[in-house]
Image 1 (cartoon, rainbow, N blue to C red):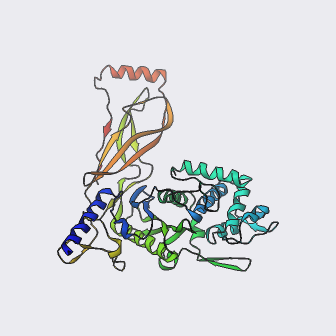
Image 2 (cartoon, rainbow, N blue to C red):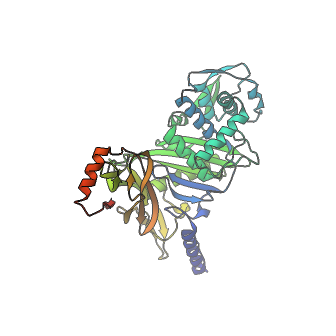
Image 3 (tube, rainbow, N blue to C red):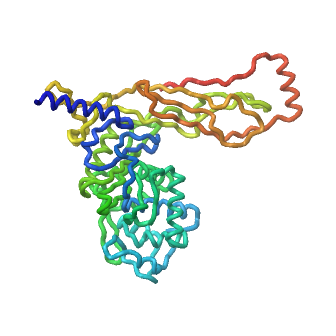
Length: 434
């Protein structure tokens, strides 16, 4: 009977290996949450996921979008953290059993305090007050929320209110919340100044941050919790840790857990997924900053070749787990951060992360030539990265191409020179060594 159970377990693990997306395969049943995803925002790659595109109630994780818009308004100069806002009757729409700062109409409060109340206290009255201030009304702000979600590629999302109140047409997904977290950490990183706060007080009301991972992991600095009866316990978690790599000295990861059974469980699951991803994946620099990967011929210009380079380093996330068996999170050694694997020989084997990966990159030029004059952003090449001969990421190299057309005299000289040259210029691709 034990042999039959063992065979069924192995088959389950192998099926998980075949059906799971991402770089690392984790047995879904071993993760105590309804939906989850791990995203590397540097590469944009999903490390592991389950039900990550299933539409679910995001609850107060919705407020990440409110804050994201608010910080964009601050950056644009249309809002200031020092601005004093007078609360309006809009705060009366918040019910007695909702998280709130207990704002009253005509009460004055700064944008800075509203942001802290929004992110740390998860205050619904802060959400509607900011919404009304930014867009003039809550419905207009909700339209803005959906417009921003669309721009970020959040295809599983539709917002109907800024607070995260449960409604039939208010939904998102673990993957979309990770995309929003990625946008927040990259575009509006000041958010993290608030989400790392352990507590916040307003009008003698003290509120301790509900992101329990802040207490146990100093690398954690956000992002947002959420809970309703319909949603369960949700958490979008992020951390940044040193890598020891001079080309990419710090690495940030984002984990989203939806539908956990308790606040303790959502933090525990999210942190375990986070640690697992840090241990068994890493980022590798594929294209260095200003590295030339191709030369493209230029026509009608004195410039003969246009160099295809990267404005900033291009990274890829690779797996450091080389087993065919999916990972059982229930047997993961949280102290030593190691996968403990039963391969069927009667002993539990510790699986250490790889120190080297079998990766290669292929450059594909998208333009055979550039015709002057031209002044626009162009996708000149892609770099396809393979690990163990499996495509894991495609990097797009876009450049601002500014090439002037040659004048008449220069064109005559170029024509004269071409009489003595029979070879037409072709694009040159330079191999990338990983």
